[in-house]
Length: 258
Image (cartoon, rainbow, N blue to C red; front, side):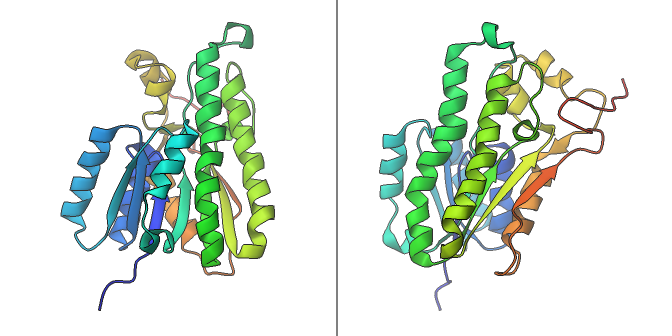
């Protein structure tokens, strides 16, 4: 008998939270739809999953989530036997760029954060939600941040985008509750992924200093949490989670031993 297919679609799946989430779900026999901008990285990841989990289906979609036409065309390429079995959407793609006071901010950085963290989440959700509605069930997990709860110095536009993710999660929950679609917002604190390297544009010294003196979260911590919330009974929804390293009390208060 052919395996019953159940797909999870993960944006930003080439590293960090997205990649670790894919590993956990693959180990539990879930089929994967993995998206990202880095074509070669996606191809490499697909090969690894095919080797380690030959019983699951692994589909990769290579597009820039900032570009709505690319999102639309990529999702359109999915066959009906896949779209009718999409159970979970993980809106993970996101980034921070730079830390400056507003008057010194880089407008290109602002555009990229807004286009990725807000508009990209909307573009992809708009394409996938109709499948979940047709299936009469589903789960959307949006990756927020402590920056969506508290604004911190020089975090202005990034914090604004993550506040928007918080609001959109609440709005989705209201719009979709009648379709049995769950919506969860997960807000990590300091987590050591590629986040700081991207934020500081490859400056390893500054990126590493962000996590000096304490033990930050790692990608697996968040991936395990995503798996937990997505595997609760049908009548249970975990709406919102704030997850911090023990050494972090707020967006800007840490206990560091240096």
